[in-house]
Length: 341
Image (cartoon, rainbow, N blue to C red):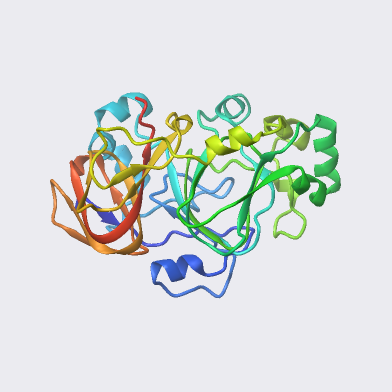
């Protein structure tokens, strides 16, 4: 097998979904709403709750172990030379059944200094569906002083925090980069594909009303005095917001049926493409995760038989699959590691 269709992988969370992942994937919906994420092709564990979050391949192998056993087959020589046996990304489906709490992820410098990790958690979102007026909160709209932020968090002054953020309305098809350090919250009514650095580091700025003890578990074990040091408190202006919400223009040598989704600032961390066969989408050899967002079609690799696909499918494509093609009346999102090597 050179292309791996993956089943849902849903670790429990502290916020609620609305059954959109089950509906999207065409699988039975769980009665418990606290499974709002599907960790796709994951070699990353839930913070403090390993092995929750790790992907098991259809043949019963752990994906992390399979990659460790043959990293060049999975990732390619160039990637292994830079990252070792580490895919360097995590992809999720995320169903916001309620607004997520305002939170922030540390950047690489903070993670290296305090969390013994080479990765922070820059992330980006590709919206699959959104209810009317659905929105995300992204960064502060003005500069916030350290003491002001500390008081907001300690006293859970949620309205004041949210009022200080940028509210960005979203719709299906939007792509937004959320750099590490930016306070953010995904609003209710949104289903998205998320690609991120491969960690589960989150500092909660808000926890009231959610199924988590923020003072105990919201600061990565660092305590809030230290954890809040990862927050970008600077005001995010309209120009910067537009940059985070704007795709880089396609170049003349783009492959047919493929459109890059993120601005250049994401290239250090990951890449994503929208696949819309015209009449074919051509995929260069790369470790990648493909989420089919509409229709049905067929994906074919150099090294294996054609694989039929339909909306809701998630597929893992190793480097060794070689050049691949997607055909049919379908669209998909392809996520892959940094392309700056």
